[in-house]
Length: 88
Image (cartoon, rainbow, N blue to C red):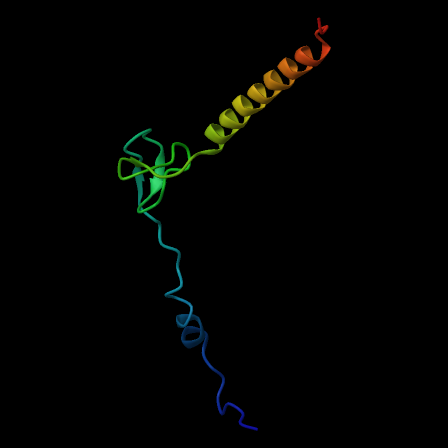
C-alpha cells in the first residue's frame, strides 16, 4: 500500500481549500411589489415574473378557498331551508 514519503506542509494542504469561499448572490427588486428577489426567480409574495402573473400565491389560494367555503355553506343553508319548508 502506498504511503506518502514526506509530510505535506500546512500551506500546501490549506491551499486546496482556499478557493471554496461563498460568493454573495445579487438581489434585485420585484417589478410589481418591489420585494427583494434573486435574479431569474418568481416573486414569492406576488407571483409575478418579468411583469406577468405566472403563479398564485398562498394568500390568493387561501382567499379563494374561503370564498368557495362560504358559497358551499350558503348552498347547504338554502338546501336545509328548502327541506324544512312545509309542503302545501
